[in-house]
Image 1 (cartoon, rainbow, N blue to C red):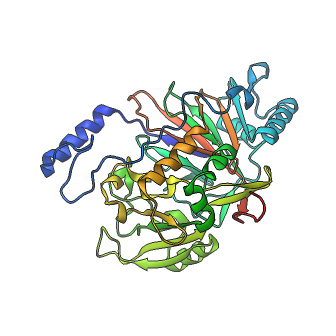
Image 2: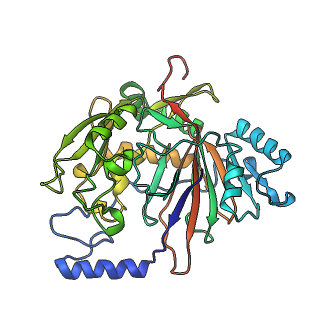
Image 3: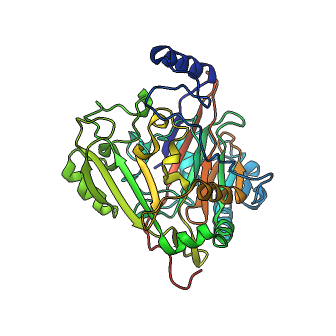
Length: 393
């Protein structure tokens, strides 16, 4: 089923008013465009994503089908379905535009041409609360950067592909970017960073808070909280969380919450794996890791951005435990941008792409009080990660 990604409206004026109120309470002043609270981290972001260079790496026409010639229906015609499958096989991505579709069920049926046997979102990083069975919210604020990433690279299982369906789309806001991963991989492997990632792999550390300690509140309420283990794994007890984490290939440790000393049910999960993944469609290893799983993911995430980087709920290192330098993170981000292509949304558009051949992300955006962005997300069939395969470089 579709996952509904609803973005509540936000505007710059409202945020400025809220920040001004906080400054008045704590006596802080502006710092790097943010309010300052004593004892909290407020440094400006060190890595600023650009998502693409001057023009799209992959021309839109190579993966776009104009549906003006097809009558909108509850499901695509056999001819359109065949065109979609052929394009996906060749390029790894399909974009349908001018569909005139308004019904979410119909959009879901079109997306299912590519995204077959959709998986349930379990063990995921983002705090996606359920709206209905297998239907979730986006799990990220609109005014945060979503760095390029491959979905669920931090687990032993990931998904073959995914699709976005545009239900509500203000012009030029909240556009998605996809990055062609073969070219990114080739460029990365020419660098010292690429060689280190190939030799050492990566370690993903995710720390999940206890919902009971925070009375269920998270980032929506301005808390310095990312996700609770109860929500991430859809469980109620610590025993169930350990079992669910193990099924995702994660080791677990219960530690003290660094921001709430009285909470001892702070779940630290660790996963060491290759920074690359074998792609059957391309018959080679491709990059499957990004800055999105580093603590810098939260540099623009209101609430969590106030937490010192070393205490943030996401951490990532090389496989030997050594940290990434800022220059390495900037290079990593810039290489993804070189392969970037902008997908501007219209209502009814559908974009499906391979999770290994493409990374995806989006810049922050502001909505006016009368604007709303709503995107349905379909997560493809689950696959077990194998990492890099010898001789497939």
